[in-house]
Image (tube, rainbow, N blue to C red; front, side, top):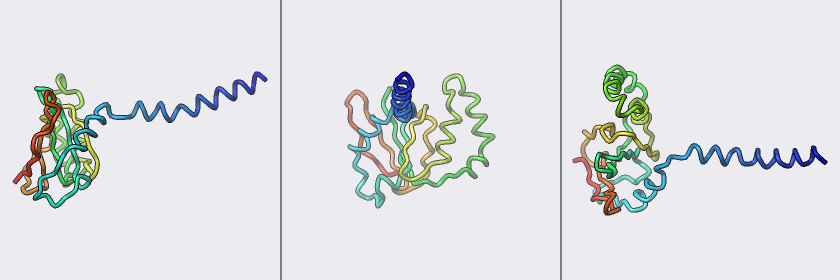
Length: 153
């Protein structure tokens, strides 16, 4: 009887482990990104869908969310090429933004359809492409609304 009770408890505990793991791994900003992505209307001149973009989000100093959608173009090879400069840049900011390197690894491993929350809005990818390969806008916290998304050129 005792073994059966122990087995019963173990089965239920083991069944909860994946749920606990999933909760622990979720991004605390997922709900906010869901709201933004549910409301955003891409510019009419964009020929791409939301799923075509790698999507980056970060709070700015006002508490608003800065948002940049970009067609993936960076790679691990690019990261290795700029690694020294990135490490120097992040070393200067480590007290304010201890996850600076992690932000840059996200940027250089971007994939279409994925979204990334960055610790610092200064770490958003630099938008120098033209057309709608890059779209920028904000989510205004106080008004709980997004600004008009604009193509970068």
